[in-house]
Amino acid sequence: MTTSSRRYHITTFGCQMNKADSERMAGILEDMGFEWSEDPNQADLILYNTCTIRDNAEHKVYSYLGRQAKRKHEQPDLTIVVSGCVAQQEGEALLRRVPELDLVMGPQHTNRLQDLLQQVFDGNQVVATEPVHIMEDITKPRRDSTVTAWVNVIYGCNERCTYCVVPNVRGVEQSRTPEAIRAEIEEIGRLGYKEVTLLGQNIDAYGRDLPGVTPEGRHLHTLTDLLYYVHDVPGIERIRFATSHPRYFTERLIKACAELPKVCEHFHIPFQSGDNEVLKRMSRGYTHEKYRRIIDTIRRYMPDASISADAIVGFPGETEQQFENTLKLVDDIGFDLLNTAAYSPRPGTPAAIWDEQLSEEIKSDRLQQLNHLVGIKAAERSQRYMGRTEEVLVEDQNTKDKTQVMGRIRGNRLTFFTGDINKLKGKLVQVKITEVRAFSLTGEEIPVLVC
Image (cartoon, rainbow, N blue to C red; front, side, top):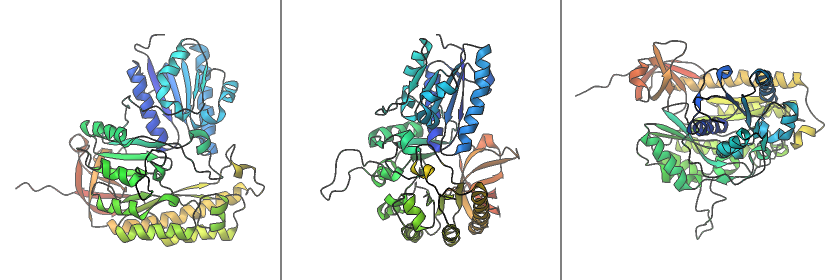
């Protein structure tokens, strides 16, 4: 089937890894001659890149699919693809549930999209969920931003947290070589991007699976080494990385972040619970004391660093006292941002079949209490920016106020100020902060004095 003048639309659910995968698949589709369609109903190929971390994301996918399956009865040439974690988890069961689907593909098959679609255009219904070695990506992603870019450095996850479906759907850890990562970042720098975020499901595990150790027995390739290796890429002004795991977060890494000027003072380190017994049952492999020591070490090296994290409330068997321990940790540390969720049982995970499931009422009540505290602490943390001058990387226009532009400071706070997006997009601007809110800031551009 010819792809000339065919249009595609991708809807992405879930994490940054999914967003990065969607950008790569968009790049592949455009290489094949497809054009982007803003309206899914005008597209000849619909791709849903799915997430299974929460129940509601999964339900949303099925409702979207139902609409497009209906459309396919009127337009048999419509191609419907489901990729990502729901695809990996459900596999052929998805075809039984939605027979109109053409292609079901797990995250490890992202780079194979063209070959798999060719099989579809040859008249086959295709399921690709078997574990594979991820091929090095050579297609240029169609990136959503022209200012900031994601770069995958490690795929998969070897952890076995009892609540998490990610290892089942994203497979074992596979690190890209430092050379391939640097080559991609150099290309991004040449294209005018100012910021990269290095991505991994468990990014601190980077390099463990690559060959070679030092005489002292340390892996030759670690995230710390990678940061030093890519730090001097021309054009790139800022480097971020996510997501970290407390079990592998080292002082050596913290020291590197403090030493390297381009690495932003922002760390995303999920703690999930502030109670040791719950952490043990989650199989997280650390205690709340260890987590606190990591944050203390970061603040010793970088007192102003922003800390964000993830937390789960209502884990099976969580007592009121154990929940209070989570509140205490949040109160003590004072996060700049905390992504919170009520526990949601995921298929194929140990915790999903445990007896001590909590009621939706208890989970909802605890989530509300935690979110209230998170807002208070974030507002307190924001106060330190009042009256300060911060460097903002301008990303876009403020959709609610067209006279303003928006971007992020190095600490990752969203910041708004009056300005012309046509002149400022992609620029690093010094902004004096005049207004602080829990999760965002407003300021005024400081004019550059020309001598």
